[in-house]
Image 1 (spheres, rainbow, N blue to C red):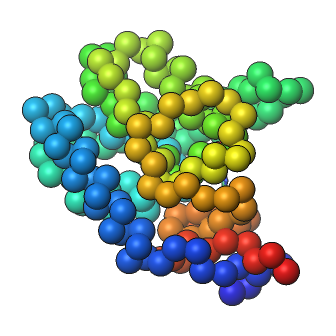
Image 2 (image 1 turned 60 degrees about the horizontal axis):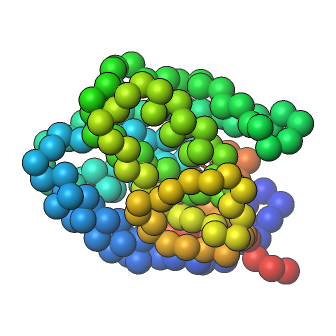
Amino acid sequence: MQIHDLNFQLLLSATQILCRVQEIAAQLSDQYKTKCPLFISILNGAFVFAADLIKSYSGPCEITFVKIQSYSGTSSSGILQTVLGLEQSIEGRDLIILEDIVDSGKTLHFFIDSLQQQKPHSICTVSLLYKPNAIQFPIHLDYVGFEIANDFVIGYGLDYNGLGRNLPDLHVLAQN
Ligand code: 5GP
Ligand code: MG
């Protein structure tokens, strides 16, 4: 499949993804059964994952969205710019962060840092995809949907220069 100038091939089917998302949702439902967690989904990429996951989550919960962009200054320091921030207090709340993919770890590392300063009761980190070979910033992931190789992927909410978010399956950049 061609998107802009690049070729992509199937990596994970919509069915495979949904199966795994439902497994994670069931585990979270059990873990938080006596609580009312606040899901925080990181836009744009995680919106499809968040929608599927929350539909399979049973029990009271809330969901909100943030949009953050990471700028690498000169090196590894990294600054996060909040484009769309949290509207409500998270003090004392049980947070479940939903991310589409963890690559260098920069986005999640600095986002978790900023959340911790607002004194939530707990923070659980969930990423649909994780590239272990790309990690540069220390982060702890409580739930990972799939570990994948260090290759560029699109579909299921993830884009290549704006396109591909609507694809139901996940596709990876073809090697040739
Ligand atoms: P990190 O801050 O961990 O380096 O990168 C996280 C963000 O980079 C993700 O939320 C996602 O928006 C983007 N990203 C990282 N890897 C990929 C990829 O393979 N495909 C796409 N479409 N976006 C990616
Ligand atoms: Mg993202």
